[in-house]
Each structure stands twice: as C-alpha cells, then as structure tokens.
Image 1 (spheres, rainbow, N blue to C red):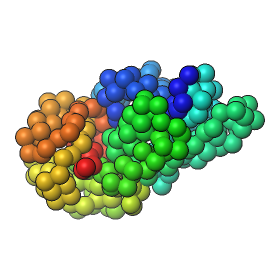
Image 2: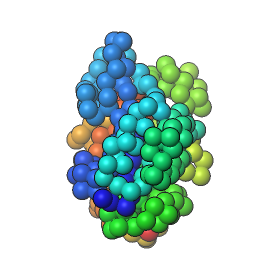
Image 3: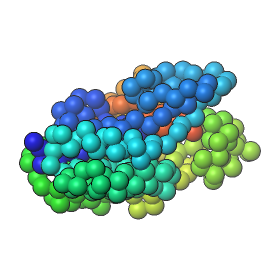
Length: 287
C-alpha cells in the first residue's frame, strides 16, 4: 500500500510516460459529439477531437464530471493507498472541483478510513499538470498526505503559468467562453490572440492580439523570458493538432531557456473545444 494516491482530471496535459511512472490516476472529462459521450483520452483522442472540429460542422462540446465519477476513482485508489489527494483544474472555469468536493463528502460514508484532500489548483492544462506532477513525485518518495499537499501548493505558489496562442477566433466567438477575447472577433478576424492563465487570477485572460502565428509565438516566448529571467525552468509545450509547429516550439524553448525538464503534449480538448484546433501553448514555472 502506498501512503498517498494522486488523482486529477484529464485536462492536466501530462505526458503519458509521467502519468504511468508516478501512477497518477486520471478521471476523464466527457466529450459530447452527436449525442454520444466519449471519455477524453479513453474513447477519443485529442487529435480525433480536433479533426472533427476542423470541419466546423456538428461541433463537439464538453460535459463536466460528476461526483460519482470521482467517487469511483476514490474507491479504486483506496485499494492501493492509505490516503488520497485529488487536484482539479481551476474552479473559476469548471465545476470539476465542486464535483470532487461532493465526492469527498460522499466518501466519508463508504470509505471512512481513507483520508481524502481535494485541491483547487486554479490552473489549467500543463500548469495543472506540473502541480499534479510535483505532488505525485512527493508521493512516490513515501511522503505523508500533508507533505504531498504542501508539494502541490508549493508549485502553485511559484505562479505556474500557461500561455496560449489561439489560431482562430471562430470558436471563442461561437462559445463566448472567454468573453473579452471573443469580443475581438468583431474587428480583427485574422488575429492570433495570446491568452494567459496563472493561479493568482485563476481565469484565462487575453494579453495580446498579434496578427500572425510567428508573432504570437515570439510574444509568448518574450513573456516567458520576462517571468523566468535566468532561472532554470520546467516546461510543457502543447499543440492542438499541430505536431510540427509544436515540435518547433519545443525546440526553440530548449534553445532559449535553461530547462530542468521539457515536454511536448497535445493540448487538452476540454479547453481546445472552446479555443479551437491550431492552438500552441506553453506551461511553465521557474525554480
């Protein structure tokens, strides 16, 4: 029996090898397409979601997790660990934290001997992933639940950040998920907006509106450089159905910064359904 099992939702954008190495349990978000629900990363891949979206017809949506989904995950985790830490994406943009909190209360009846903590990371995508990863690393070293919680909060305190470039405003304008960015659609349809998300704010906000992808990437790298200075940085680059551009972004980050770790993953469809395919993003924090 491990002392602590770490659970999160499938929006965390962690590389599969790290999820497996640190035995992180992922509770999949639901992707709804043509009246059918698919479990993110289980029944449908990010690439499949983005290929559907590129047709701009019968667009998929997301459906939040239920308390029952988390309770099931908690029960499974209790078979291999004495306690559980569940870390969710920001509660300001999703009901996932609320569902996990309800499940924690339900678990007191059916799993009274298993201590459970639920943390709102106030982060998204790879930024959430880094919070989860640090907790899982502590758990893998035999840390007790309070120490694993502290490890997660430590990364949140380092202002782990997500910067993302949206390839088109079509999807944001359609859903209105990020209102200020969607409002730009009325004037400059050829923009490549740059968005930012930090735990301090807890919501995704527009920060720049360049007209080209190349300029947007340079803006993201400039912001990142201003934040990290000469410090060593931990980075996950993301792409939404743009593998070649994602690999170029990863290579440029590796050339410009002192990286303690550097990965490339597909961008979470739970956010990508609102932002659209073609997203390039960087999640990072500095030591």
